[in-house]
Image (cartoon, rainbow, N blue to C red):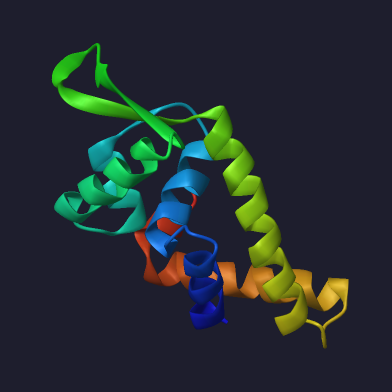
Length: 129
């Protein structure tokens, strides 16, 4: 499923890391570049190239952090939000095909179980408290 999603995202003109950046930025206010790299588990130097491309396509904008002028804050643009909605439809279609044998209750249960596994393996998924 992951390979298919990544292939379809690439075909749609948005490699997987870029989709991850857009999805992460959609969750809240502007983030520091370092926080994005940490959240996505990618090298900050690799992130810069992805951000350059997203910015060139006007899907994100970077501004200097007013608290620390050496850092950049990154935010999704309205065009980026529209692109993310389009890409999420692509991903949702693949998920629906892949999970077709499961009813909605089974899908919910699978999601909860996979989240528990992720919480146990990766600190990014652990709940606070």
